[in-house]
Amino acid sequence: MHWLMTVLHVDSTTELWWVVFGFLAQGMFTARFLVQWIASERARDSVIPLAFWYFSLAGGVMLLSYAIYRTDPVFILGQALGVIIYIRNLWLIYAKRRDEA
Image 1 (cartoon, rainbow, N blue to C red):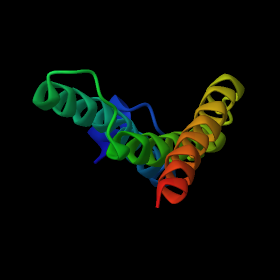
Image 2: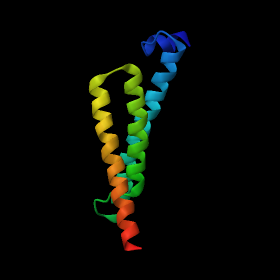
Image 3: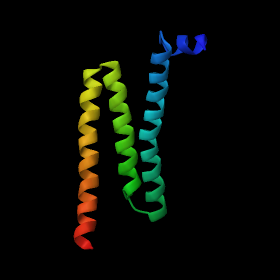
Image 4: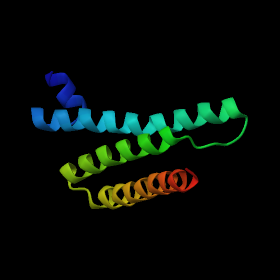
């Protein structure tokens, strides 16, 4: 495990778990693009499925948590704004569905 901590530039097990969490968060965030790409290929049109916004929100919240732990103000600001946008898009989607029902 020491070699992994050296490679990831961490000094404690807590930091190591936060870096692992950060990688998982980035994976979640990247998954949204895969979902969007597959949906667009299937439709032969550019579409944004509902799952895109859920992956965006989950990845954004996870990355924001990681940024807060790392106390990176640039990263915190960027992710906080994204989380607000993802929540707003989900809100708009469900409001439209409610109005159509």
